[in-house]
Image (cartoon, rainbow, N blue to C red; front, side, top):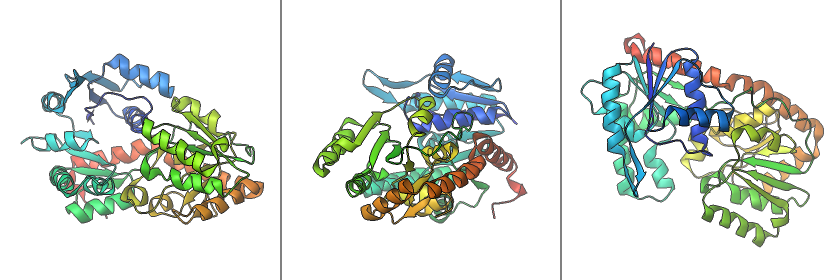
Length: 388
């Protein structure tokens, strides 16, 4: 099977989506030839894979650089790349065209002749816009854009069951589909956790508003014996707001901000901590139903005990008192109690970590690639049937 993958943005180190994209494309290319259309040079792609991820790209991956105008002289014209991509795809005629950019997918969907389009969905744009206060006008535009995608899609890969259900409800999509969660490189993230230091809570990820870090800091203030290590970064104003809240709560001496690091450095920074936390809040579609974060699977593969909110997106992966301690989302007191319980009970922590480690084996990039390849095959022959 010939597969084409395309993305119009250049690689940005430190962004989780680039970790996921490069690792997933490489994993698929281990089993079938993949042509990747990108504004980056092949050398840049290989440099990122090796330097940030410690990954050697497989022979089955062919990187093709297309013309692009992205942030040159203050301008970005996506249409330059979009047109070049449409021409390249028409020439290649792949058996499956795999995209995860809504703008690029909507552009390609306009073409009279389009190979089977498999769209990898990570959210519903109109609901994400509403969560961010973007206004009804922008939400309507995104609904129209996504409607074009799902009207032409030959397959849909959604990162959670909740997201797939939403797509089918909002857009009436009934074609081939699969739930394809995020994944972890179990070669890099190995079972290194050996009990931790009994007091340091680890959080890996960005500082975006929907990640729940304000709840986490309030919980830390209610658990005076604990410290928090944040590995990851965000915009300057996000970091400033986090530091300001820590000062107001009187916990700045117990907050360690390590900033962004290459993914290959993460295991050593996390494995010595007492537990890992995934503090998503309630009230946002993306946190409640759509997110499948890399860090969750990385914690699991390290064998770390995890504290996480009792939300549908989390329950697709973790079970309370089995592979994690779940608490009432958005409740700092409940989060503080859960953190203190896990950090203070070595037997419980080891039990949770061991179960999480076993479950992590179902979320490797190899398993993710197999799910995608099975979907590509069904999308190329849509008459074979629909998802039950």
